[in-house]
Image 1 (cartoon, rainbow, N blue to C red):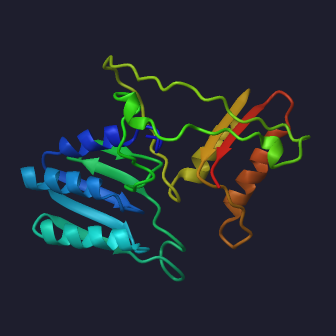
Image 2 (cartoon, rainbow, N blue to C red):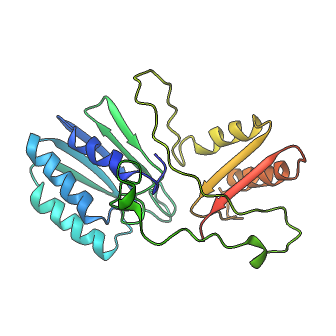
Image 3 (tube, helix red, strand yellow):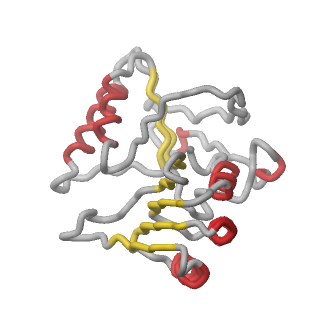
Amino acid sequence: MSAPDADWPVLKPFLEATESTLLIAMYDFNADYIATTFINAVKSSDIKVVLTWDDGMTEPEEKIRKKLRTKLKDNMDGWIFKCGNHHRFASAYHEKVAVRDHKAFWLSSGNWSLLSQPDIDPIGDPQSAVRMPDVFVPVDDFVDASMALHPPNPVRLAGLSSTPRTIKIQPVLTPDNYIGRLNELLDGAERSIYLQYAYITCSDKEGDEPFTEMLAKLAELSFKPAMDVKIIVGQ
């Protein structure tokens, strides 16, 4: 799933359909309505849960952590990943994935947070998504007008086909297989590359060379006359 477009309408029934086990790895978990749905689903069927969580706890996360430990103390094993120097992850445990009953998984670009999983259903209930309108500011207001950049045109959300069929899925997780798979996709691009990220940063730190090399490759591709490159990025 790509958050925050239409993630919560998929995550909620995924949690509610759990029958026996939930294995979860999460970076940020601060949405109380997700915690409520999660707790209700676990308690209703006496589900066994393993939750692995990044240690960078904010105040809302600490409240949810306390609620989970109180209400799910007999159902849940909780693990906090310590990040930093001399730990397995240098800065953050950034996963957002859940495995249900060892036979189905939920994988998203977004955390279990207010921003990543807003309580809206833009496809099933378009009115629920009506907040402030999207504002597309001309790129010329921010960058050199000679740069070949253009703001995207808004498009109407469309539902996916409901016809059952088998498809092959390749989960891509960072740091596990992310950079290798992304390089494969960039190397195979013939006409276009479309990217959407919350942020893109460049680093000269030891160990970050593969990411820096990937960004250099993307920069080189963006100058190819026949290659259509578009990037949506947050702040």
